[in-house]
Amino acid sequence: MHLLNFTKRTLIAAFTLFWVHPPGATAQTDIDAIMMNKNNFCVGGTYGNNSWKNYWEGTFKRNNLNLGTVSTKTFGLMGNYGITDKLNFLVGLPYVETHASAGTLHGQKGLQDLSMWLKWLALEQQIGSGTLSLYAIGGLSLPVSHYEPAFLPMSIGLHSTNLSGRVMADYQTGNFFVTASGTYTWRSDITIDQNSYYTTELYLTDKVYMPNMASYNVRAGYRSERLIAEAVFDQMYTLGGFDIRKNDMPFPSNKMNATTAGVNFKYTFKAVDGLSLVGGGDYTLAGRNVGQATAWDIGVFYILSFTHKGKKSSQGQKPAQPSSKTN
Image (cartoon, rainbow, N blue to C red):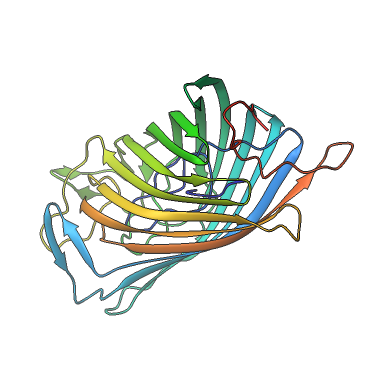
């Protein structure tokens, strides 16, 4: 299970805003071109840390001495099961803690959102010296605890139920690859713990309309049986929303755009069949109504085989030779 980018990036198929960094940001896989073999189950955990001091209030970049540095710790549990060689089921659940180094705002902690995906390898075709693979991915996320979303930036999430659809293309020649994907996410309205609020006008209700989101992701690098190393570029857009008002707190339905870049790796141990170490980091290059975050994470995963022979796959990763098919 190649756990590179469960977030941003998180990750997830649901987008959690960048005030709270998406859980397991560099940990697998609804967004990479890796498939788990039939009857293999990869399971593991990650630890992630995200922090920011500066943020964009609309397009104005600033800091806030009443917050100091805002940090988020994420402990993620994830799994990927190969229903067939070309259809995988993925699941993830993060526990999130937030903290501000200054001021009087107390952080939140708790279980955030359960995320599930179906990932289908629709086409694999040799073109030139390499292999082109096309994927379709569908995702669902829903909150599993009663955290308060209208307490940003201390909230652990946005508490909306999300449906996402993604198309993805991957081209590998030898050990080098490039992957590109685009995602659209539908978000449900949410209920907050107050009976009125102001965005661009006054609303006398506890219901908040959540605009949908879109993103695209490009990654490229080296992919072999034992090592994957990649550079990642990600762009996230909110399709609607409004800017944070001057000196105000962020609000769940803000417009939240972010451009991030980072690196990820996965190393599969030869001495212990099925055991792998993953990690990575990223930085927010530009944004609107988000924190300029620096994030990193690390995780350990293990493959369990439920085949009759008990044989594990080569981590479900795409073959290095273009003449091979799904492993």
